[in-house]
Image 1 (cartoon, rainbow, N blue to C red):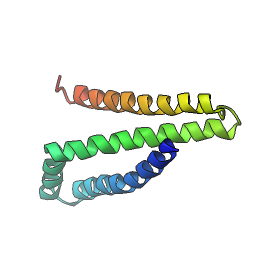
Image 2 (cartoon, rainbow, N blue to C red; image 1 turned 120 degrees about the vertical axis):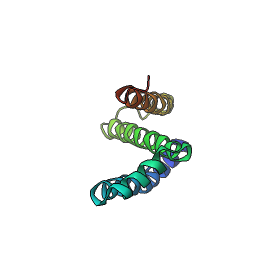
Image 3 (cartoon, one colour; image 1 turned 90 degrees about the horizontal axis):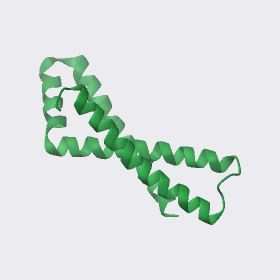
Image 4 (cartoon, rainbow, N blue to C red; image 1 turned 90 degrees about the vertical axis):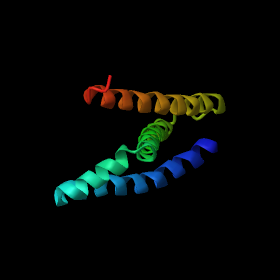
Length: 111
């Protein structure tokens, strides 16, 4: 039940995050000043925290969708198995988020 609620919350958070991606793209297409402002906002500690949360929401929602796809085949519906898959979804989303951010910083040469 908890994972179902979190899946819905992350789906809603993705709407907000997608607006941030759209703002970034619009700023990049508008002017250097607009892009510099958005780049500054996303580069601040609060901006990075929001982007980190967006990344986690994206990974968690994606893995939750895969969990539902598995259930649609009729597999993993037993309570014990469903709990294992739920914990795997949570752990996987955390690991994938960290890997995405590590890869992003590595690509920028921050390491």
